[in-house]
Amino acid sequence: MSHPLEWINSELARLEARGRRRWLREFAAEAAADSNRLNFSSNDYLGLARHPAVIEAAVAAAREWGVGATASPHLCGRRPVHAELERRLAKFNGAEAALVFPSGYAANVGAISALVGRGDTVFADRLAHASLLDGARLSGATLRRFRHNDVNHLEEMLRTSPASGRRLVVTESVFSMDGDFAPLAEVARCAAEHGAALYVDEAHALGVYGPGGAGLLAEAGVRGGGVVAIGTLSKALGSQGGLIAGTADLREWLVQSARSLMYSTGLSPIAAAAALAALDVLAREPDRPARLRHLAAQFRRRLRELGVAVADGDCPIVPVILGDDPRAMEAAARLREEGILAVAIRPPTVPEGAARIRFTVTLNLSPEQVETAARRVARLVGPLGV
Ligand SMILES: Cc1ncc(COP(=O)(O)O)c(C=O)c1O
Image 1 (cartoon, rainbow, N blue to C red):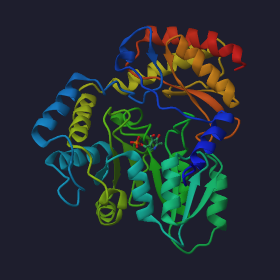
Image 2: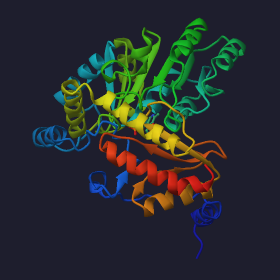
Image 3: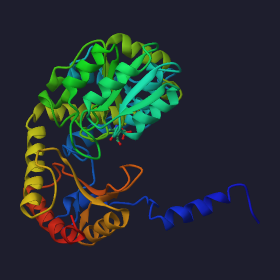
Image 4: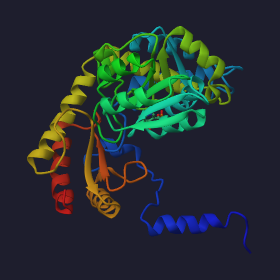
């Protein structure tokens, strides 16, 4: 008997045939601690998701405020811990104000669609994260995409686009799939010269780069009323949730108009308390970001010494580009069999022909484990033609 959703079956078969089907996998929680199962796929950069003080704060928050926020923040979904977290995040970012969202994805979709609309233009880096592009598309603004990190191309687009309407330049400070950096000072100068606001996703920079882990905008000294920083509590801070940092007016405008904030249950008080505790750990142990970068540099250096083509540097996101999808899937399977959890990333997450294994280095790994992994990666992935 056919039904109106019958097409799903053939679409799934089509994905399967193209090698594009995705799976939800369960990773054992103890994987990070087991020296035979090395987790290179988590964004828990600073090793805070299972930090005792962070867990303790989460448990205490559940006891005090309950598990869920129970409503939108505009109704009764805010607790004192949310306000305290926003104050701390603003200070951490060197911004006037911050606003928390249920996720980084929700922050991007809600904020971009609150800042631009029909008749406006978003200029986004070609490799910008899906949540940034989704925000731009939802907004109804014209979306123009400049070549990755190419400020000349951005400049040309800004020059040749209609001057009417609002303009928003969107980029990431650390690119999530490549582990490279936007030339923020130049992008900021270019945006300012052409009357565009600058919107920077610091999801992979917060806690990793910048003074005290404050991100690359802070490091580049890019500040001011025309700059919006977004981040996530879900990566280096080991919790869950998103944040926007900028002026008090920006925060107030988003409270009025960000639909992903208004029409969604607020960030769980558990996640808020955990993020606060993670910020405390980071303040007490300010060497964590440098230790992480040192470990990432070790992984990259050893891979290079062992003949694997990766860029030099210290970014904990380490892509090994394999080209076509089957090769990336084969590499991930081989790694998994030998205890290395590192996922294959395929189009459309990355451009066609640029399938890869994306390794992430975290402080859950020891230098010895990183050495072991580099050797295994060289042995297993090397023969695949890297
Ligand atoms: C660059 C970037 N922005 C935003 C997000 C979304 O953040 P979250 O996982 O908190 O929704 C991610 C994470 O996937 C990301 O990599």
